[in-house]
Amino acid sequence: MLTALSCQLTTKRNFDTISAAHAAENNQNGLNTLWFLFVLEDSAQNQAHSV
Image (cartoon, rainbow, N blue to C red; front, side, top):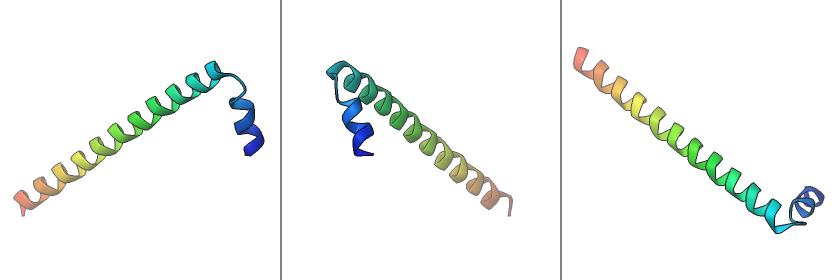
């Protein structure tokens, strides 16, 4: 793990590219999670209304 990390850190440009990719990935995961929670909440409300 540390060896792979040190290889990634060899150039600043590589590190910046990797950081940007991780940030975009994390942001996308966050949006997916929010959307999933919204859908869950919406379906729960619909079920509550239909009872």
